[in-house]
Amino acid sequence: MTDKLPLPGPLPAGQHPGCDTSGMYLVHRIFRWLYRELPELVRDVRPGDTARSAVVGRYAHLDFFALHLHHETEDLVLWDRLETREPACALHVGQMRAQHAEVAVRLARIEPQLEPWVATADPRLRDAFATDVEGLRDLLSAHLGQEEVEILPVAGDVMSQQEWDSMEEHTRAALMKHRKELGKDVMALQLGLLLASVPASEREDWFRANVPAPVRVLYLLLLKRRYDHAMRELYPDRPVPAMV
Image (cartoon, rainbow, N blue to C red):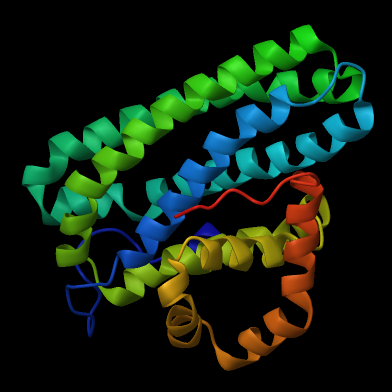
């Protein structure tokens, strides 16, 4: 998978600096929403309700996988290029690397807690798990905000569109590779969450401009139903909280 990514260093021949990084703001909006919602969903599980803990636990696993993959992709594609092409950005890149390492440490502490809580719905395990996720949420929120201010404008200036697009291609390939583990609805969740991250007044135009026609048809015919089912599973008794 990683050998298909462009090599760091100077821009490849025929490519030009300047890329549209706006999609990353949507991805960050999704992560803020996921990690804002997850602790509350966990705390709402009643003691002993293992059916509900299994539902919430499945989506928690997806949240953790997505965050690992997001940071792995940035580590592979962004940091070396930015340091090479814009040395003044090296300090901020170093901070990003350190923050990614701290997120990995938090995930390593959190993820082993998931299975014991899912299996028992024990309230003490639940509360400890939710508290650690809240700590990760706060760390992630600060990290994403700094990345938007210090990193994305530089990436937009010094990376080519082909290099930037390789991150999305890497993500899609990883999701397909792990589709059996993640569930058949993972692509529906990815696209559904992206659409939810766009303000409602802009959503239709964004859908037409950014999603190929065959995928739009597939989403409307099949994937949207899967996404809506997933949201009903997560929020059976209340509306899905707005992302924007």
